[in-house]
Image (cartoon, rainbow over all chains, first blue to last red):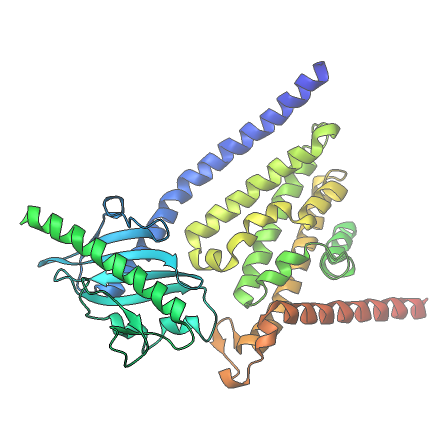
Length: 193
Length: 204
């Protein structure tokens, strides 16, 4: 019994010293890590909205409403002239999993779509990150249906041949991001202006 | 002094943790696709090994024998977390490319092995020599493997292009290529050790 107390006491003593040391290191490095993470997000957002001077994090206010698609981050880009647009970082199922960054202008049109990561089959599904597929979304209205079909079939988005599931999943993420974000933007803009 | 030099070179060559003892291999194969990763991982590992060996050697008389392993792990984990946080704060790029392998230093068998087999039984000076030898021994092998792999696999050295992209061999950037290069290093080290041993035998 006595040795048990002795052993637990000395183990606790080592743990306490270690915790105190770590607390000091954490307190000095944490602001730097946070600043680094913020800068990374801002850099990525600035690529979509170079004219923006600041980005407001509204992630908590915009929900995807689809259990399979998550909005990892939603940011309103503020330029000197007012709201420049809204950026949604969304992750959802394609054939694998894709994380996209969708920029939507205040006039409800998609500015551009950036692929941050996609785990689909190399050479097939990963073509979603390349032209001509990716560029098809640029300047489409966020209210359009984003129907996916064969090239020339009249569908809004021409699917990648051999990767229809990827194409559909991709379009679904863009469509959802577009509609939810422009919804939010029109609500808040309406009340603010 | 001679004793310390012997301990230091022991880790560097004769009992190199990777090439002779063959411990701590998974991290070494996983991160050696780029030279910067090799240097970063090697130095991070050397730091944790050095600090843990110093502390454990200092406290070796007051660490109760029956709970020594948990105490070792607390000490190693503390230094690993310090390194991890420092790298995230000051070298975020490097930290991202190493991913999970920095936190995994906690369970690296080189550190556990040296701490248990050496630092807990020897004085601080010897522990420092051992840690530096083992740590730098690990580092130079890592850098060596990553030089070969980055040069042949990606055609670059420290991100400076040396071989045109069309002539690179992607195989070396993947895990099997790592095994091949690693095996090559083991055999060269064995050959060198044999030769030096034979030379000594002849001199007698």
